[in-house]
Image 1 (cartoon, rainbow, N blue to C red):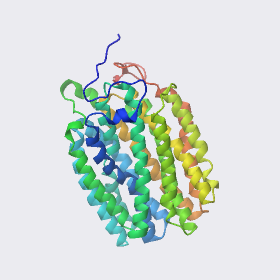
Image 2: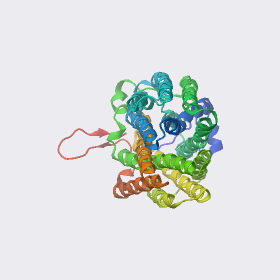
Image 3: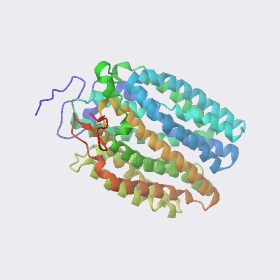
Image 4: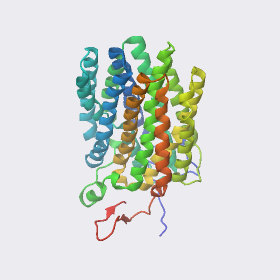
Length: 430
């Protein structure tokens, strides 16, 4: 039955196509966007800061990659539970203790690295550092979902805007971390990361008026259904693991390449070029009124990403590597944006923060595995061998997407999905 949707006072008026200007005029948006941007910087700074600090103190990219990987794995494992708790108890209740734990454990990791502590001690500090990384991006996306609940035409614009914001942090974050670690002190990156986490996270948590409401009573059981039980979310997790392999492989391999040519300061520039391509294509994606179905766009965009990543290992000059990095970055944004857009149709509102954190955690896990493998390849083989990691990760993820693309089709609302045979308990989807 058709129904008429009346826009709320918080949502922008419907438009024939999405627009960033209209999106940013949403009432109350800036109150969580500005502190959220500050609190997001640590996510982009953490891995590269650990790699640069530990490599400086140990002289090994393999050890540095392993320490960073422990942090990434911990974040990937704990992020979904953080998202589930935020859906159930509210973002503020989860964010404040998480910020405090992350700041303390990050500073502890820094002190241990400077004291030449054994690897097991670095790992012990890396676990809580990664586990407590604040999931600001998913929380901001969940707040947009509340603000735009009566403006479905703006959903793609919001997803694109968030991808652009994420990639802007991946332009600013690595540049800032590299500059601090190389020009100030090897520990300056992690210290700054901890400070931004504390200040930005607490300011973001203070914005109570825009956080999603916590449902109670009869809606509780539906709200607390795990997003991981939805088949499409599991497929997206694999896709985002591949994207994480690009981020991790690029970080380690670019650092090793620039050191091998005697220009370590170029690391941040090259990685910033890669992230800038991601940001620019994200802006373009948000300005286009797409006609193709999201699951088809994801497969096509991912194929382009795998193709672009296939040439990285053969690049042996700064200019060629910068050009290929820019191209790879331009191919990532469409996949990220489309993946987050698909969540809106696949996952009920009460589980979306958890779903977003599963995807964010998948990127972190892919990144963790990539920095470990790429670090070993750089230590054991030729300069640039780590660039094989983004190629392998994206090809494997693309094969999964092609095989399981039917699971990315959103089901009609107000249905339950029962899998298997017999009288098994149906799983609520919406």
